[in-house]
Length: 179
Image 1 (cartoon, rainbow, N blue to C red):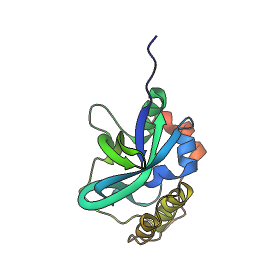
Image 2 (cartoon, helix red, strand yellow; image 1 turned 45 degrees about the vertical axis):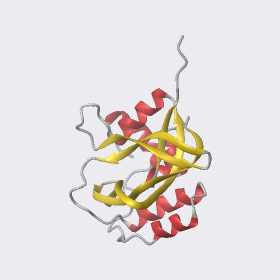
Image 3 (tube, rainbow, N blue to C red; image 1 turned 180 degrees about the vertical axis):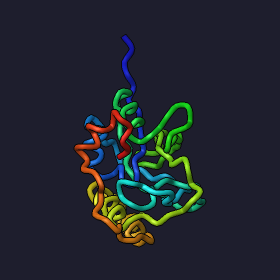
């Protein structure tokens, strides 16, 4: 019997929030903090859950995005793909992006999610940025990274957000609901 190798995934943005991670990937093992060099955080389109732009990473020499490296079972990685809207035929809202992140123990090869549609840059809701910042604080990401995140242009959501609670996301994920 072959031994299953875990999928190493780099999580940034809202995926950092411990409630979201526990709901979408309860078996995830946090390995370390990581830095995706030469990329920056940007927001595009419209995230229905948070009523504002949705985060992705874009190439930007000299910039960096901090996050965490988690180990997922193949089954859990497949489930997270479904929740995040990744489709192997390329029609999903997100796609896998292989990358190398810097960690305290050296570079680690990972996969991360990138938003497919980056045509319309849109500010996130202030509530979404606060949610992301809670996750960054929880995992002890660098203070300068947190300060840059909190300084991002945002706008208050015109209605209460999130529009769905995270335990409901787990139940709805089979129907294609996105975290």
